[in-house]
Image 1 (cartoon, rainbow, N blue to C red):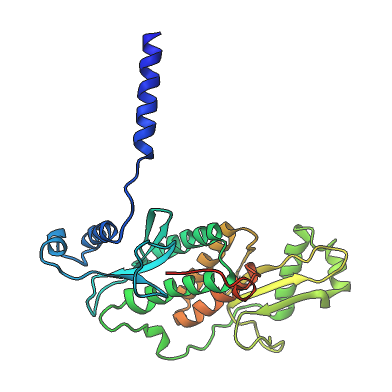
Image 2: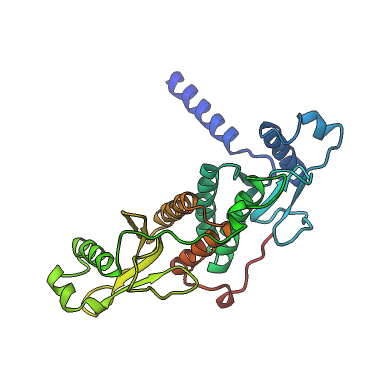
Length: 299
């Protein structure tokens, strides 16, 4: 009996200790951020921040002046020098998550965490698009080349690479996929109603030239038929192979964005073009606009 009582006391005391959390303030958060910058070799050592008063910039994205209470949202921080790397940090209910976008994998992980946070906060489409676009922009424009702060891929527009697919052969491949997904009854049904299969590009110019092979790029497609649910899918057309995905959940949206980032990397896209494609993808996932419910107060 004494052993059981002792175990119970230990469990209760341990549980109580875990629940005690220090209130997150600007001062103690900046100390944590300084320690992170030391690890990233952006500050020589912690003493340089604590005793030598070397500056550390920390501020909201939309509101530069900080309030007494840290609002839930995303903030930016760096070592306040002209050639520094920049990072973001998510503040959520007295806790924080640093978004390390110094590498491509770090960017992917940060986008996944941001989408998770945005869903928890029930952000509207424009806010999510804004946050993700900023992550992409800072990674490619600043963190990849902090000295010049330019993305060389944006210097000249590259002519798109042609795939081995004609529009007709691409549509057939997509139709075969939709048959497997039970979106189309069978391939004969597709041949009878082939005009119902809509394929759209994510480019500024949405037309697809039937006389030439399809440009490598990102496309959406769906089969429009009242007898079936009209699910929309997405396909990345590479030189001689396809990547098909959907974005029904935030996890699959994150996976789709990762595929786009990898494709854009291999084809040397300007990050502005990559961001535009990702913004369109997010807009198709989140239909509620901020103009429908303009109540968010962002840092």
